[in-house]
Image (cartoon, rainbow over all chains, first blue to last red; front, side, top):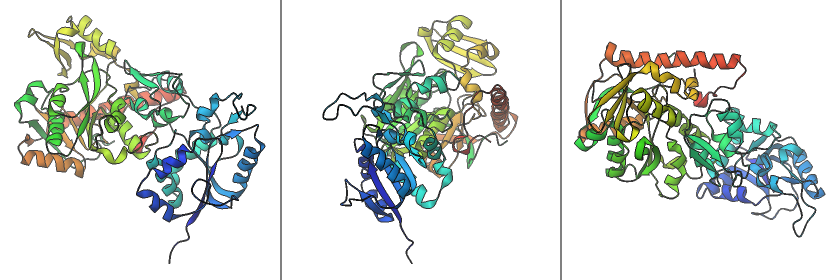
Length: 223
Length: 289
């Protein structure tokens, strides 16, 4: 007898779709994932107009406060999803949308973006711009298995409602006498904003997109 | 407390290749393993700590035995090896990567393998983790003070540094040997090392270092199947010669003693920092006991 598959929906708010692309970037594993779940809503991949109730709703993107539609979708997601996952740094931490100030066409008044975690309660949040395909697969697998231990960091990120920045490394690691100069933060940065100088990370604020990856990968911070 | 972590076996070994022994710190295990890996298609790249003038460490992706040889020898300062981890798979297109690192760097790598958030398509390309024994490390300027001010030697003249018999040793290209008591070097250690309880890189596939073996030999801790396979093949094919590890006071005894000393000393520091309300490193991959 086949176990009942969990139903999964993918909802996009203000984002670039990179997190979904990252999930699809698992090549041959992607069909396996699709066949191990029951995808019920995903505007990019399928034709379903209404967000249905689902075991897991993956939400990518931050929430534009001037867009009442976005706020309604956020609320709807919370009502219909048993487990709501903020997928990627825009939903989890705000990421590059933190730099938005409005004034752009065609919606010049759309200028206030908050992370999904600030707007609704998220059961899990995954930082990263985008999170790697392998990590997304691990998280989905852990959700299916009910592996709370593996999900711990993502539960914690779901609870945190603040932004993240490369500079967090200075405050939380270097200033606290914890940085030993391994260099993993530098390698993990998607924009190469971190250079190792004299065995410590030097963060370029002009390149940092506030995705939170560096702090997440640091072995000296509790995640 | 288990001083050495999980392992299958411990041996003393050294490389048979004279080119390696000439440049290596002790038995040349790390160089030999990587060269064996590159020559036998088990690896196509290795993340190593190479060096520039004046012992300035430079993390590097070595793709040839020559590059591995260039990086041989211990640098007693911080080399952020893992900063080139992603370059290895992107710029260098490596698919079978060996990584050498201090215990903390091996911990970082294991964490990245468990949670590869910022590492797309990396996990299945890490082929081997080689850890080196490490008590503590020095910032570059700390090392410079030890060499130039305490030992009275210009860094540009130094060909090798070593720690042993309670002293920090400096060898110059003029053949001079200078040393200073290890106690004198303590003020120049980086303080973040004092909350680390891993001496023997317990999460590596293979760990190696000088402690526990005679001069010119290295102690090799084989921790899992992956490590065992490569070491056994190297012995069989003549890349390594071995001798049984000395089970006594100057072999396993001293190794366990030093590993335990680091754990006990630094657990105290961790407790001290907790009392002050300061953060301490988390238990990554269940390493801290």
